[in-house]
Image 1 (cartoon, rainbow, N blue to C red):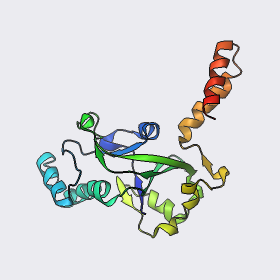
Image 2: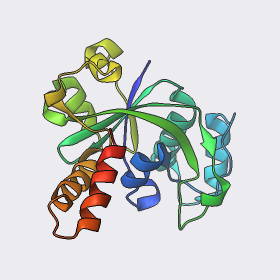
Image 3: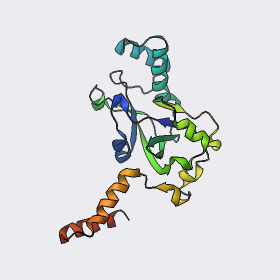
Image 4: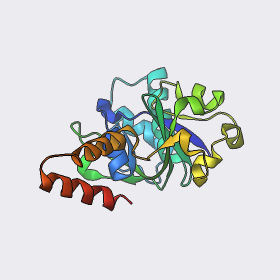
Length: 202
């Protein structure tokens, strides 16, 4: 099992809310087609055809990012995405291609499903993991053995609850605060709707 940090702006657009709500991750580089069963050499050929400005080290970087997401990352590997002071942790599935999003507007056709397992305060992760998360590349593999990350409790749901929040992170917390405040509304209908929404989260 490997660990990867991933940035949440495929093709330059912030997609973290969609990643969390729809349980997937994605990278950019649209218009190079479905990359299922495609190796690094073929990825480079397609990049050369579509992104003609990519040469030398620039080509090597972009090819490396795509190859890491498509071929190096494997089902059950761990992905981490930073959001402010928090880190979302999940396990990924198989690469898949969404043709509908293969354009410069959406730019997130290369995807993997994710089961989000925990959201952790970054300062509760060890130094090696925090250093890994500082990497500015689109995707980066953790360079140490998995056990040195010390994240098993978060994957197994056995961590100290004071160190974690809902898998939806700050988005969930803000929504929860709104619901709690709505319980004190003078409008009975609003109170009933808020109570119903809270009950459904149990």
